[in-house]
Image 1 (cartoon, helix red, strand yellow):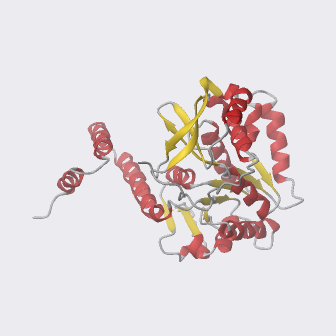
Image 2: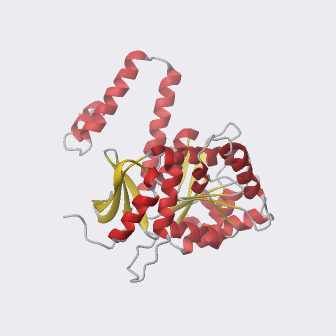
Image 3: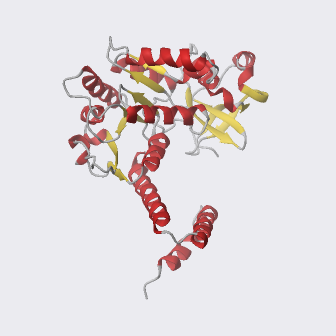
Length: 350
C-alpha cells in the first residue's frame, strides 16, 4: 500500500541528521494552518518552498566552486561598451576558476552568460507579468537555469551562493539588487564578499554615484564613513577580477560560533601582527580582543582563524581589516588556496 506524504516523511525523518530542524519547520506550518485557510497565503508558502527546493537542487553540484554574480541593465545593447565589458568579465572570471551567475535576462546578463559559456553559466530567471525569457546563452544549459516565482527567493540565492558581486550600469532593477546586497552586507546578514562596481573606461556612472553617496549620505551621518569600504571600483575585466581574487588571498570565509565572529584564513599570522590588528581595529571589537586560533570550516577542514566579538555596526571596518590581511607581505610564499575553489589543501579536522 502506497504511503501518504506524511507517512513517507515520518519514515525519512527517522535517521535524518537535521530531524529537529525539519520538525520545527513542520510545527511552523501547522501553526500557520491553524490560523489561515486563505488560498493566497498557501500559494505564497507553496511557491516559496518550491523555489527553495529547486534552488538547492541546482546549486548542490556547484557548492565547491566559487561564483561571481553579474548585475546590470537588461536594456544594454550588444554594440555598447558595457555589453562588451560584461562579456570580457565573464571570460576573465572563468579563466580564473569561477562560474558566472546572472538573472538570465538580456543586456548585461546575456553578455555575461555569453562570455562564460553554457558549462560555466548559471541563470536565475524570475517570472514576470510581461514574461521575461531567459537569454539564449543559458536557456539551453541543462541543470543551470532556475525559474523563480518570487523576487525574494531569487535574491536569497543570489547572495547565498555568490562569492563576489560585480555591478555594471543599470536602472531600477540593478540598483534594487545593489542596495539589497549592500544592506545585507552592511548589517552582517551575509558573510563578507567583494562587491565591485564596474563601468567602461571613461564612463563616470559609478564615480558620480559614489560621490553622491559620500556627499548626501556619509556627510550627514546616515551611513558610517567606512561603509564606502564595502565597495570597490574597476575599469576593466582584469581589474575587477584582480580585486575579487585578492579578496581571497589570505581571507577564506567567515562564520559565527555562537556570538563570536571567526575569520578563516589560508595562513596563520605572526603574534606581532595580531597585536597590531588589536591596536588598529579596536573599534571593530565589541568586547575583549582579537585572538588567533584554529577552527573547522563548513567542509570539516581545520584552518587558522581570527576570533572576536564584532560590533555589527562597523562592517565597513571589517572590510578594512580583510583588506589589511590580504595586503600582507608573505615572504615565505606559502601555498595559498586559489579563490576558484573552496576545496582545501590541508588535512580535515580529526
